[in-house]
Structures are given as C-alpha cells and as structure tokens.
Image (cartoon, rainbow, N blue to C red; front, side, top):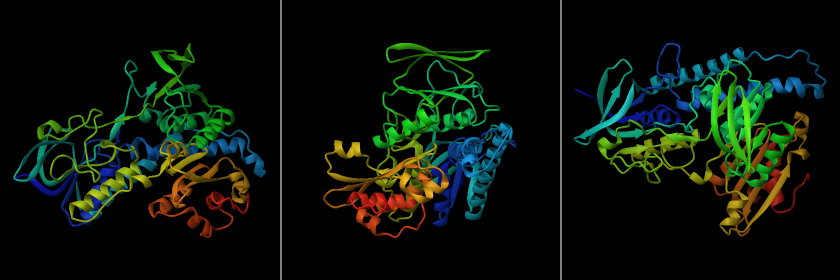
Length: 479
C-alpha cells in the first residue's frame, strides 16, 4: 500500500521546505521530495535549493570575504592600520563558503526532524489521481521508485539558470552561477554576460580579488528595474570608483573556447568588438523547473514561459494542487517563495494566509548594497500618481562617516494627497538591513509622517531613513 500524506511538497528550496515545515506545524502529515545533491561529498540529498547551495548564501559568503580583502588593501589605512603583503587564499575562501552551506543544509534536515516532516529522496512527478488523492512518483537515483499519495500537493521545484544558444556551459571555463562560486583561482580576465543581480554580485567578488572584469549587458539601460536615481549612483560607483567595465546594448555573437580561454564577439554602439578572457560567467536570468514534472499526466496548466499558472493565493487549475516560488509568476526571490509557502500551508487548513506582493523587498548585495520596496519614481510618473519625494545622502550621517563609507542615499516616496509611503529606495552600506523598516511601513500603510515621528537611535545609519521621511515634508533636521 502506498504511503499517504495530507501534504506532499515537491522541492526543498526556500518555498518548499518552509511550506513543508509550516504544514507540519499546523498538524498535517507532510512529506517533502528532493532529488538534488549539489555535489554533496556523501552523495546525500541537500535541502535548501539553489538559494542555499549555489545562490544566495554562498554568494554572500564570497562577497564578505572579498570585501574584507578589499578593505585590508584599501580602507584600513584611513584608520591608521598598516598592512603589508595581504594575500587571498582562494581555496580557503571557497572552503569557508562550502562549510557555511553544509551547516545550513544540515540545519534544515534538523528542522524536518523536529517538525516531523518526512524527507523523500528522489525526483518527484505527478502520475495521476485516485479517490481524491494525488499520486506522486518518487524516483531515486539508484533506480528505485515508489508512489506516494496526498490530499494536497505543493509544487516548489524552483528555477535553473538560463543558458544561451551556442554557449555551452561546462562550469569550469564557461560558468553559470554554480561554477562561478567555485573558481579555484582568481582569473586574470573575467567576462560576464548579464548585468543583473547575479552578474554584478559575482563580478564584484572577483574584481575585488584582482580580476579584470568586463560585463556585457544586452539592455540599453543599467538596472532598469531600480529607481533611476539609484541606478545612476550605482553606475557611477561601479564603473568609476570600482573599475567594472560594463558595456550596455551588447549583442552577443560567436563565443569560442580554446586552450587560451574564451573569445566573445559582440556588437555595441554599432561597432563589432572582441573580448578575450580566461573565464566567462553567463548570468542572463533563470527559467522555471517544470521539466519532467508530469504536468501532462494530470492536466496541470503551464504558461508559455514554463511557469505554473496560479491565482493570487498560489492555487493551480487543479483541486488541492498549489505552486510557489520561482516556478510561478512574480519575482524570483527566495523570501517571496517562503512567504507563499507559508500562505499555502495556512490556506490548506482554512486560515487566511496571504502575501502582500506590493511589500516584497528587493536587495542587491553589491558594494554599496541596493535595496528597495514599493514603487520607483518612474513607475509613479507612468501611472500618473502625484507624489512627494525626500532624499538624504549618507554623507551627512555621523555613523557612516565613522565607518568610513558615505556612499549613497535614502529616498522616500509618498502620496501627495494622503502621505502614504509608496516606495523607499536605498543605496549604501547595510541597505539590505535598513530596508526592513520601510517594508514594515509599506505593509502597515504608514505615512512619511509616521516614519518622521519615530525616534531613531543615534548614531545609526537608520537616521538617514528618518531624515529622508522628514525631507518629504521639506523639514530635514541634519541636512
């Protein structure tokens, strides 16, 4: 007889493992299916998905290591700290990153055990439905298969890197995000295709460690999704101060790999160029993982972009079948998938789980960091919304001066009529942490006056958020 569960989650990335844990907390018998081992030394299944294994977590570990190296070489001197002969051991840096990943993946297994979530190792796919129970096949790597049954199925199979035709990725010379996190040495010349989050973050890592980095971006605009004041500041810092060579409007032609490295032919500004590099990172977005899901077996609707069609509460066209995270519409952000996982688990038991998609923060972990929530000025203008803006630079902030980095600013956008906060944009040190206050404000419908009336500790970077809120009403106190 097949194993039966109230809920079977397919995929143990951020959306999947959180959905499984929350479902179990709510008293539902829950199983989670995962097949990826991500080169685990023991060959065991690794939980956490792309984010934890070859995405968010390992990239932040490398960013921190490279930032410390950069500070030792260029910033310590202003504090009166002299350093000589600073060296980077890439193998040690990568090993530290791997240890962090291993610790966290084991931590999720511990959470599964604590919450009584059954882990099923293998590839999960739909095979049918019988007596209101969905049948999911779990195919193990050793060739064995089993069928499990569930009243509810949550699909959380995530996404994979989008590759370009004619550019084979071997994750040694030509890499996607996974290979770019495990270089065995600093390349002398590094090419990056794509100036999005992944391209800028990984390009920054290897630039700080000494690589000559050229980023080729197909779009004519830099960071088009961000507020354009932020994008302009970021462009200035990345290109002039940090020396990243970013080519916009680049149309990629033939890419050749030989014993000398990689040669990329591309066209920009109506001229043909050639880029010679030792290694190439391809970071041109991600596509949903819906291959071999068995969608056709049960009539699960998938759109032209490979995403599972869902409503506002992540319900698919099939009864008791849900989908969350990168495999559905919306931004491919780990925290968005987690919130959807919680929402679905709560709705299964009749609670009013929800996700406010207007209050999801965006973060880029470059240096300076970039973070925002809500609307940009450009979006408000295009929508005909009247607004007021307050913008304050970190240059006027005592804590930023003490830290030795006054790059960037905070911008608050509020409705001209109601003063409700419509968007907040930050570029600067710790933007990823500072944005949390703005997310709370947007979630609870706060006004700029509300932020302006809150006491912020002194001296902190958060005071710039306070001053920007005051600036909406043209009454900043320290600028």
